[in-house]
Length: 485
Image (cartoon, rainbow, N blue to C red; front, side, top):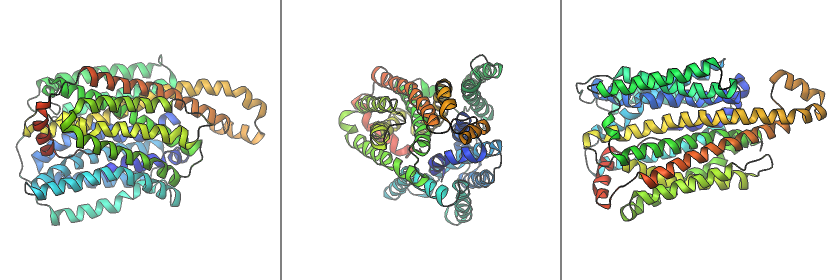
């Protein structure tokens, strides 16, 4: 349910935009409000399960997620939906890490636990693909609100069944690093807000500058708190190893590009290619297939080649796919302008996912494997939010400039009805609006290419995993279990 929610809402974004009158730049908050709280509080959620009892915390997270989904479905104003999405992220951050830990405590070590982890990994991988189709069907056949309402019966069923099948775990004494969690989440939110504000009001806007200043202060405070905390939410020693630090940089960079790619291509296929929500969901399914193929290949040949070749090759392929997408235009077809580059992108990401997870947990003790893999997942979510905000800033500037270019032709050739609609919405209708959207998207993919190249440079220059590390690497990874995407 938690993994599915990231993709099921994406397909509904154009309909949410129309129903609640979001601008394209503000629409990114529908994604970021969820991923920022989810990524920022993920490690705290895992710690809460250890201290308070995992079953109790798991059920609390599920119920909070369910309540937030219900509130989001009834939203009448943009701020109501964004508040509900942030609350969903909090619920997901509480439930997600405890669900993985509960598998460890529920199933005995050996074949039974391995089977349980296999099912968990399959559900996590399938959640994204199911979300694409379910989002399309619910939006087209019912209403966009049902992409949120659908969580309610599932969440209630989980809450009812959990006490019947899952035992409470033993509590472990410890401390909550609430200050660390709050300063990191608030700092990243201020940073993301600064970029999105800059895309609308410019870089000299006082609120833009104030947001960036607040982000610097909060993130510096976070680093100071973590360096002095007895039980920090983010153990800074995790960054002492160059391979692990490099892995976090690669994941942050690739996730930054990935979130932007999905966000903008969803808008393109529905607003320019005029795909229905179901067609849009089907259009993205091939990406999940090639991600699975790439992940399977890396898992099979990792013991032979080591992780570095997969990181380098995967990042090159991702950069090539994003570069191809930067050529998108109103005349682009699905096969040549969308499918081809998405397949390249997905295969490159598939080569990286398993490899990054294994490298992140290499060289850490079993008691820290969860923290190392959890930090990688948090990096993915926070990096995605930050990347999307940066790409949105570029999109906003490029689309505004293109709108000025299109305005004379619009005024000369538009019908009275089209001019009246523009006066009401302040957005150019097709075909001028298609030009504006396509120019903004194609320009936004240029910094996405730069993010992929940063991942490539990090993989080539920083990562130094030896062949002798591979046995320990595989053993630690299996102990950490599969991570949620």
